[in-house]
Image (cartoon, rainbow, N blue to C red):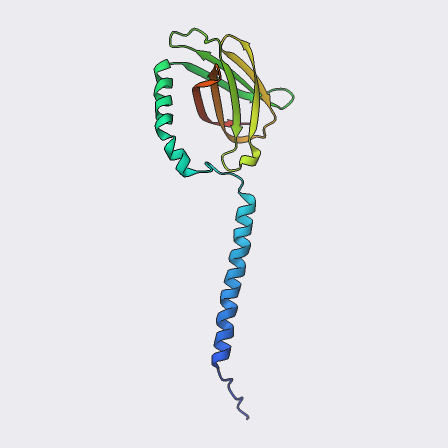
Length: 163
């Protein structure tokens, strides 16, 4: 019976295994980074620094909005054609419809800004707006801006589910 000669482990072989292992890890990481960056289209804010500077103004605007005590009701559903329909009613603290406003609404996808939709709203009466958008079923963030003379007087952000 002949005995096989065992292979000797040299420094060069260890180096090749070491380089091969880390090369494989690097290649997998590169593929994963590419996949992650190509599928995520949403950015909450483009500049955290600028958003931080605007924080005091945002707080002041929220306090002004709270002092109005407005009741803003939005109803989001589907029409017979399958389009998303948004109806908004704006009333002041005493329940009287607020006139002289323009409204802008957006449906923002929580994970992918490429799927966002602007909702074109028409004023259909004092404090009443109606709009239609082609949005898919799922969870959305409904953002309503109410403006008077080009200045925002009310901002609403709500999580909604569209069937």
